[in-house]
Figure 1 (cartoon, rainbow, N blue to C red):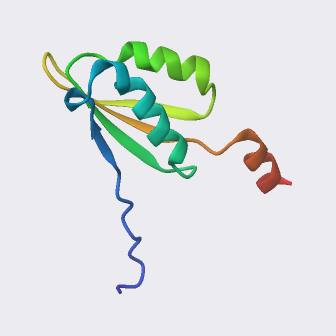
Figure 2 (tube, helix red, strand yellow; figure 1 turned 180 degrees about the horizontal axis):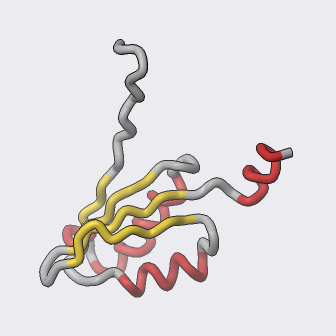
Length: 94
């Protein structure tokens, strides 16, 4: 092990193009809920996952960060990072 080298976090990736449409959103939410705060997952889609983003805004308000990594005509890649819960942040600051 090299000193000063930070262990790189593996980012799970889900290609929702391979899933039935009816299970895409529930699968993404399930994977997100299993993440530890500060960790991310990467989503691959065949369309802009804007409807999923709206659901995150409603169901997981303030608990995620959404980054488009690729916004293309056939492939979209998004990184969704789980933020620390408000109660976790307050406890750490206290």
